[in-house]
Image 1: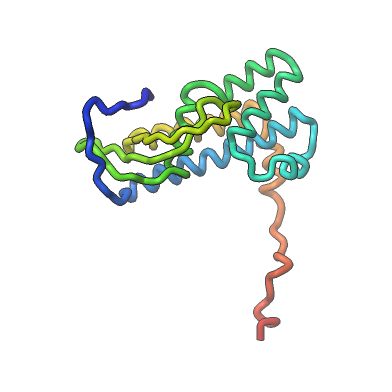
Image 2 (image 1 turned 45 degrees about the vertical axis):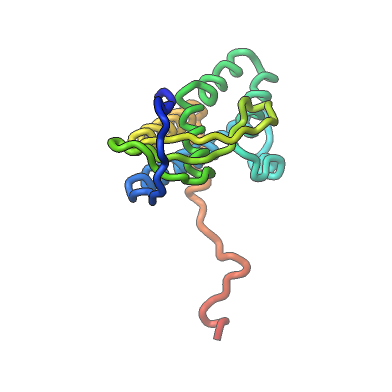
Length: 192
């Protein structure tokens, strides 16, 4: 999907996002959570460390930092793995979906412009390149159909990454564990 640039001066009107837009944003954010989980496991494979170690090292690092780390680690192996990593995480559709996710998840809703279809404008910060520490503020706009499309791209990519890296068996172990009670939880009998 190509970026849309306003051809003429546009008035941004205050608005509330419709339920369909919130739903599309939720699908987009949810799909990227799956991508980030797969990315973390991939980093573990590349660095040959346990998942707990990667969580300690990366903490709450942004996805851009994790992507840079995955690319750097793949370069330590071989050219084919570096190309595979680039194809999975650095192609244009994925970059655009990530930019949309960042804008709608972290940006400030400025309002809407246009008639049919409506465009929703978000004020967001962005880096020109992952290694560039210079930030810029920009307004980006998305139609409902754009966000739905990017959510589809992210969900498809998450499934492709999981399948390509054989992550289903690793993830399956998590899903087959029972949940233990939290140490701060109190039973109904102890509260009385």
